[in-house]
Structures are given as structure tokens and as C-alpha cells.
Length: 224
Image (tube, rainbow, N blue to C red; front, side):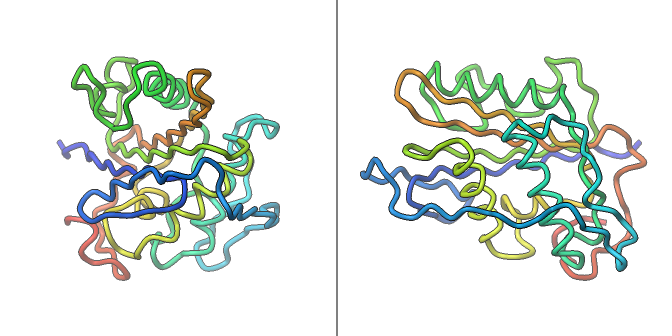
């Protein structure tokens, strides 16, 4: 039987700050960002002739929910980077993943930490196991902001994730990951301090979704 994949990276930012290794950022001293990039791109027509995939399909979430907007932005990024994503499928919404993602965002607020590993020692795949979710691949991106409205934070988070280097294990490779078929997103504004916690949980649920063919554009990104 094939071995499940575990991919996890994190970022923390107000004004974007990166460090090496697992890309843990730091929270800067200002309370209000000076730049708010807003993504107004149309995501209604993303039919890829190269990949033979319609990335503008309805992912199955509520369009009035900012988390649903983020799913469409993720699929837009997969559409716009066919070589790097290796024609990854359009992601579908998973309410089960979203519940786990939101619970982690709320937990980070309530217990005042920012990490994939919670104070109980649980990692993303442990939280999926606890929720009774069977998975074959899992990845998680985290974002923390202060001073952004929710819609703005969605745009800032997605743009900052995608601004990372190509073909490396980071947030970008989670977003473009060819083995992921579902995503759930939890966004929580913490009443304790006004910070916005955002969790993206990616997963596939079937071994048949895991590809064994070489990745020509990013040959070192996947083990074959």
C-alpha cells in the first residue's frame, strides 16, 4: 500500500517577513499595514486547454463566504501555473476539512499560539484523524494578520503565499500540489486581540489520487 503524504509549512505575517527553514515569519511592530493588495481578477472563465481542466467549476462552497473566495483564488493559481502544478486538478470544497481548519484557527486564538503543532502535540494529520477523516495526503498553510478586514486578508494571504519561490516545499507548493483534490479553509477573528487566524487544509482521500509519474517542471519536489 502506498504511504500517505504529510506536507506542512507555515507563515506568520503582518508586514511580510520571511526566514529560512520552514518559513516561519515574525510579527512586526506596526498595528496597521501600509499596503493592502486587493485581488479583483475574474475567476469565472478558467478553462485550461493545456490541462483539459475547468478551473472555474463551482467548488461546492457558499460564494458569500470569504473562505469560498479563497478556494477560487487557489484554483486560479493552479490554472495560471500549469507547468508548476503539473495540471493539478481543480480543488473541491470539503466541509469536513473546513471544520478542522476553523477549529484550529479558533484554538490558536483561544490558547494564544501560532503553529501547526498545538499545545497537545497534535499535528494537522492528527487533527484529521481525530475528526474521523481518512486521508492519503495532507498539507496545511497558516496565516496570521492584524489590521486587515477579512476580504483583504484573504487576498494578502494568497498573494504572499504565491510570492514564494517555485519548486520548493512551501506554501506555494501546497497551493499548487498535484496530489491534493480537496481543501477546507477556516478564518477566525480573535475577540481577545483582534488578530485574524486563517488555516488552509489540503487533502486527498483516495490512493488513486496520488500520482507516481515524474514532475518534469519540479523534478525534486516529488519522490517517485
